[in-house]
Image: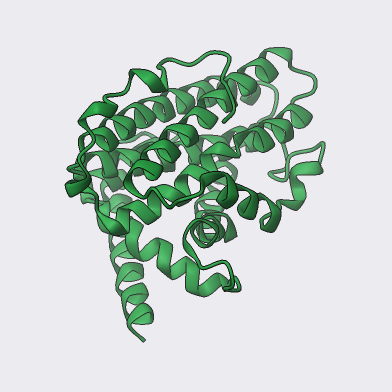
Length: 279
Protein backbone atom coordinates (compact mmCIF):
# COMPACT_ATOMS: atom_id res chain seq x y z
CA UNK A 1 0.00 0.00 0.00
CA UNK A 2 1.09 3.58 -0.60
CA UNK A 3 3.46 5.09 1.97
CA UNK A 4 2.52 8.55 3.20
CA UNK A 5 5.07 11.35 3.54
CA UNK A 6 3.59 12.99 6.63
CA UNK A 7 0.56 12.28 8.76
CA UNK A 8 -0.61 13.17 12.26
CA UNK A 9 -0.65 9.50 13.32
CA UNK A 10 0.79 6.21 12.13
CA UNK A 11 -1.08 3.05 11.23
CA UNK A 12 1.26 0.87 13.26
CA UNK A 13 0.47 2.93 16.37
CA UNK A 14 -3.15 1.76 16.36
CA UNK A 15 -4.11 -0.87 18.98
CA UNK A 16 -4.20 -3.80 16.55
CA UNK A 17 -3.62 -6.30 19.35
CA UNK A 18 -7.04 -5.41 20.80
CA UNK A 19 -8.91 -6.56 17.69
CA UNK A 20 -12.04 -8.49 18.72
CA UNK A 21 -13.62 -10.51 15.91
CA UNK A 22 -16.68 -11.25 18.05
CA UNK A 23 -17.59 -7.54 17.91
CA UNK A 24 -17.43 -7.19 14.12
CA UNK A 25 -20.77 -6.05 12.69
CA UNK A 26 -21.23 -7.72 9.25
CA UNK A 27 -23.17 -4.78 7.80
CA UNK A 28 -20.61 -2.30 9.08
CA UNK A 29 -17.80 -4.42 7.66
CA UNK A 30 -19.30 -3.97 4.18
CA UNK A 31 -19.38 -0.19 4.67
CA UNK A 32 -15.77 -0.13 5.87
CA UNK A 33 -14.60 -2.09 2.83
CA UNK A 34 -16.28 0.48 0.57
CA UNK A 35 -14.93 3.43 2.57
CA UNK A 36 -11.39 2.04 2.32
CA UNK A 37 -11.59 2.16 -1.49
CA UNK A 38 -12.84 5.74 -1.63
CA UNK A 39 -10.30 7.05 0.88
CA UNK A 40 -7.41 5.22 -0.78
CA UNK A 41 -8.22 6.89 -4.10
CA UNK A 42 -7.56 10.41 -2.80
CA UNK A 43 -4.58 11.18 -5.03
CA UNK A 44 -6.95 11.37 -8.02
CA UNK A 45 -8.79 14.19 -6.24
CA UNK A 46 -5.50 15.86 -5.34
CA UNK A 47 -4.44 15.93 -9.01
CA UNK A 48 -7.77 17.53 -9.90
CA UNK A 49 -7.35 20.19 -7.22
CA UNK A 50 -3.76 20.91 -8.22
CA UNK A 51 -5.01 21.67 -11.72
CA UNK A 52 -7.64 24.07 -10.44
CA UNK A 53 -5.23 25.81 -8.07
CA UNK A 54 -2.23 25.80 -10.42
CA UNK A 55 -1.57 29.41 -9.44
CA UNK A 56 -1.36 28.64 -5.71
CA UNK A 57 1.71 26.64 -4.58
CA UNK A 58 0.62 26.81 -0.93
CA UNK A 59 -2.70 25.18 -1.71
CA UNK A 60 -1.06 22.57 -3.95
CA UNK A 61 1.24 21.56 -1.10
CA UNK A 62 -1.70 21.38 1.29
CA UNK A 63 -3.65 19.26 -1.20
CA UNK A 64 -0.79 16.76 -1.36
CA UNK A 65 -0.64 16.50 2.43
CA UNK A 66 -4.43 16.12 2.52
CA UNK A 67 -4.25 13.28 -0.01
CA UNK A 68 -1.50 11.52 1.95
CA UNK A 69 -3.69 11.50 5.04
CA UNK A 70 -6.76 10.33 3.11
CA UNK A 71 -4.76 7.45 1.60
CA UNK A 72 -3.62 6.50 5.10
CA UNK A 73 -7.27 6.41 6.15
CA UNK A 74 -7.95 3.96 3.35
CA UNK A 75 -4.95 1.83 4.26
CA UNK A 76 -5.98 1.66 7.94
CA UNK A 77 -9.57 0.78 7.09
CA UNK A 78 -8.37 -1.84 4.60
CA UNK A 79 -6.08 -3.45 7.18
CA UNK A 80 -8.96 -3.66 9.63
CA UNK A 81 -11.30 -5.08 6.97
CA UNK A 82 -8.75 -7.76 6.06
CA UNK A 83 -8.48 -8.74 9.72
CA UNK A 84 -12.26 -8.91 10.03
CA UNK A 85 -12.57 -10.83 6.75
CA UNK A 86 -9.35 -12.67 5.80
CA UNK A 87 -10.87 -13.48 2.39
CA UNK A 88 -11.16 -9.79 1.48
CA UNK A 89 -8.69 -8.92 -1.28
CA UNK A 90 -8.31 -5.17 -0.94
CA UNK A 91 -5.93 -4.69 -3.86
CA UNK A 92 -8.27 -6.58 -6.21
CA UNK A 93 -11.27 -4.62 -4.95
CA UNK A 94 -9.39 -1.35 -5.43
CA UNK A 95 -8.53 -2.27 -9.03
CA UNK A 96 -12.16 -3.14 -9.64
CA UNK A 97 -13.24 0.21 -8.20
CA UNK A 98 -10.78 2.40 -10.09
CA UNK A 99 -11.35 0.51 -13.34
CA UNK A 100 -15.12 0.87 -13.19
CA UNK A 101 -15.57 4.27 -11.57
CA UNK A 102 -14.27 7.31 -13.42
CA UNK A 103 -14.92 10.99 -12.72
CA UNK A 104 -14.98 12.86 -16.04
CA UNK A 105 -14.24 16.31 -14.61
CA UNK A 106 -10.96 15.20 -13.04
CA UNK A 107 -9.22 16.18 -16.28
CA UNK A 108 -10.55 19.74 -16.05
CA UNK A 109 -8.34 22.74 -15.31
CA UNK A 110 -11.26 24.76 -13.98
CA UNK A 111 -13.57 23.91 -11.12
CA UNK A 112 -16.92 22.40 -12.01
CA UNK A 113 -18.23 24.63 -9.19
CA UNK A 114 -17.62 27.75 -11.29
CA UNK A 115 -14.81 29.27 -9.23
CA UNK A 116 -11.99 28.40 -6.87
CA UNK A 117 -14.13 29.58 -3.96
CA UNK A 118 -16.89 27.27 -5.13
CA UNK A 119 -14.48 24.34 -5.20
CA UNK A 120 -13.38 25.10 -1.64
CA UNK A 121 -17.00 25.23 -0.47
CA UNK A 122 -17.54 21.81 -2.05
CA UNK A 123 -14.45 20.47 -0.29
CA UNK A 124 -15.73 21.82 3.03
CA UNK A 125 -18.98 19.95 2.47
CA UNK A 126 -17.13 16.71 1.71
CA UNK A 127 -15.10 17.04 4.90
CA UNK A 128 -18.29 17.84 6.81
CA UNK A 129 -19.82 14.60 5.59
CA UNK A 130 -16.82 12.41 6.26
CA UNK A 131 -16.14 13.86 9.70
CA UNK A 132 -19.74 13.27 10.76
CA UNK A 133 -19.79 9.79 9.17
CA UNK A 134 -16.73 8.50 11.01
CA UNK A 135 -17.86 10.20 14.21
CA UNK A 136 -21.21 8.40 13.95
CA UNK A 137 -19.55 5.05 13.31
CA UNK A 138 -16.99 5.60 16.07
CA UNK A 139 -19.81 6.36 18.51
CA UNK A 140 -21.74 3.24 17.54
CA UNK A 141 -19.10 0.57 17.03
CA UNK A 142 -18.05 -1.85 19.78
CA UNK A 143 -14.94 -3.26 18.12
CA UNK A 144 -12.05 -1.39 19.81
CA UNK A 145 -9.64 -1.14 16.86
CA UNK A 146 -12.26 0.20 14.46
CA UNK A 147 -13.40 2.66 17.12
CA UNK A 148 -9.83 3.95 17.42
CA UNK A 149 -9.47 4.21 13.62
CA UNK A 150 -12.76 6.08 13.20
CA UNK A 151 -11.96 8.56 15.94
CA UNK A 152 -8.61 9.37 14.35
CA UNK A 153 -10.13 9.72 10.89
CA UNK A 154 -12.97 11.91 12.19
CA UNK A 155 -10.42 14.22 13.83
CA UNK A 156 -8.40 14.38 10.60
CA UNK A 157 -11.50 15.20 8.55
CA UNK A 158 -12.44 18.00 10.93
CA UNK A 159 -8.94 19.42 10.57
CA UNK A 160 -9.25 19.10 6.78
CA UNK A 161 -12.49 21.07 6.94
CA UNK A 162 -10.64 23.86 8.73
CA UNK A 163 -7.86 23.71 6.14
CA UNK A 164 -10.24 24.22 3.22
CA UNK A 165 -12.30 26.76 5.16
CA UNK A 166 -9.21 28.87 5.83
CA UNK A 167 -8.33 28.87 2.13
CA UNK A 168 -11.97 29.66 1.35
CA UNK A 169 -11.86 32.81 3.48
CA UNK A 170 -8.82 33.99 1.54
CA UNK A 171 -10.34 33.27 -1.86
CA UNK A 172 -13.62 34.95 -0.99
CA UNK A 173 -11.71 38.20 -0.73
CA UNK A 174 -11.05 37.88 -4.47
CA UNK A 175 -14.24 36.11 -5.61
CA UNK A 176 -17.39 37.59 -4.16
CA UNK A 177 -19.91 34.79 -3.67
CA UNK A 178 -23.00 35.77 -1.73
CA UNK A 179 -24.63 33.44 0.78
CA UNK A 180 -27.23 32.20 -1.70
CA UNK A 181 -24.54 31.22 -4.20
CA UNK A 182 -22.52 29.53 -1.48
CA UNK A 183 -25.58 27.68 -0.22
CA UNK A 184 -26.44 26.53 -3.74
CA UNK A 185 -22.98 25.00 -4.17
CA UNK A 186 -23.08 23.41 -0.72
CA UNK A 187 -26.51 21.82 -1.18
CA UNK A 188 -25.55 20.65 -4.65
CA UNK A 189 -22.47 18.91 -3.30
CA UNK A 190 -24.53 17.32 -0.53
CA UNK A 191 -26.87 15.81 -3.11
CA UNK A 192 -23.86 14.41 -4.94
CA UNK A 193 -23.08 12.30 -1.87
CA UNK A 194 -25.67 9.92 -3.26
CA UNK A 195 -23.98 9.68 -6.66
CA UNK A 196 -22.17 6.65 -8.08
CA UNK A 197 -18.93 6.86 -6.11
CA UNK A 198 -20.05 5.34 -2.81
CA UNK A 199 -22.52 2.97 -4.46
CA UNK A 200 -19.85 1.75 -6.86
CA UNK A 201 -17.33 1.39 -4.05
CA UNK A 202 -19.83 -0.74 -2.14
CA UNK A 203 -20.31 -2.88 -5.26
CA UNK A 204 -16.57 -3.19 -5.95
CA UNK A 205 -15.83 -4.21 -2.36
CA UNK A 206 -18.72 -6.57 -1.74
CA UNK A 207 -20.44 -7.87 -4.89
CA UNK A 208 -19.60 -11.25 -6.48
CA UNK A 209 -17.17 -10.92 -9.38
CA UNK A 210 -19.77 -12.08 -11.90
CA UNK A 211 -22.38 -9.53 -10.81
CA UNK A 212 -23.11 -6.46 -12.94
CA UNK A 213 -23.24 -3.05 -11.31
CA UNK A 214 -26.73 -1.61 -10.80
CA UNK A 215 -26.63 1.90 -9.42
CA UNK A 216 -30.04 1.90 -7.73
CA UNK A 217 -29.47 -1.45 -6.06
CA UNK A 218 -26.08 -0.60 -4.63
CA UNK A 219 -27.10 2.89 -3.65
CA UNK A 220 -29.83 1.31 -1.53
CA UNK A 221 -27.40 -1.29 -0.17
CA UNK A 222 -24.95 1.42 0.89
CA UNK A 223 -27.31 4.09 2.22
CA UNK A 224 -29.56 1.56 3.95
CA UNK A 225 -26.62 0.58 6.13
CA UNK A 226 -24.95 3.98 6.52
CA UNK A 227 -28.04 5.87 7.66
CA UNK A 228 -28.50 3.58 10.66
CA UNK A 229 -25.49 5.02 12.45
CA UNK A 230 -26.63 8.65 12.47
CA UNK A 231 -28.39 10.31 15.39
CA UNK A 232 -29.84 13.84 15.62
CA UNK A 233 -26.71 15.32 17.20
CA UNK A 234 -24.63 14.09 14.25
CA UNK A 235 -26.98 15.79 11.82
CA UNK A 236 -26.97 18.96 13.94
CA UNK A 237 -23.18 19.06 13.64
CA UNK A 238 -23.38 18.62 9.87
CA UNK A 239 -25.76 21.58 9.58
CA UNK A 240 -23.55 23.76 11.80
CA UNK A 241 -20.51 23.08 9.60
CA UNK A 242 -22.56 23.65 6.43
CA UNK A 243 -23.83 26.98 7.78
CA UNK A 244 -20.30 28.12 8.55
CA UNK A 245 -19.09 27.29 5.02
CA UNK A 246 -22.02 29.26 3.59
CA UNK A 247 -21.44 32.35 5.73
CA UNK A 248 -24.44 31.69 7.97
CA UNK A 249 -24.40 31.68 11.78
CA UNK A 250 -24.79 28.23 13.31
CA UNK A 251 -26.70 27.50 16.51
CA UNK A 252 -29.47 29.94 15.66
CA UNK A 253 -33.22 29.39 15.29
CA UNK A 254 -32.72 28.86 11.55
CA UNK A 255 -30.04 26.30 12.25
CA UNK A 256 -32.45 24.41 14.51
CA UNK A 257 -35.18 24.39 11.85
CA UNK A 258 -32.79 23.21 9.12
CA UNK A 259 -31.31 20.54 11.37
CA UNK A 260 -34.76 19.10 12.09
CA UNK A 261 -35.64 19.23 8.39
CA UNK A 262 -32.46 17.37 7.42
CA UNK A 263 -33.10 14.74 10.09
CA UNK A 264 -36.65 14.28 8.80
CA UNK A 265 -35.36 13.95 5.22
CA UNK A 266 -32.77 11.40 6.32
CA UNK A 267 -35.36 9.33 8.17
CA UNK A 268 -37.76 9.49 5.21
CA UNK A 269 -35.00 8.36 2.84
CA UNK A 270 -34.03 5.56 5.22
CA UNK A 271 -37.62 4.26 5.31
CA UNK A 272 -37.87 4.36 1.51
CA UNK A 273 -34.56 2.51 1.19
CA UNK A 274 -35.73 -0.14 3.64
CA UNK A 275 -38.92 -0.67 1.69
CA UNK A 276 -37.04 -0.80 -1.61
CA UNK A 277 -34.56 -3.32 -0.23
CA UNK A 278 -37.34 -5.50 1.14
CA UNK A 279 -39.08 -5.41 -2.24
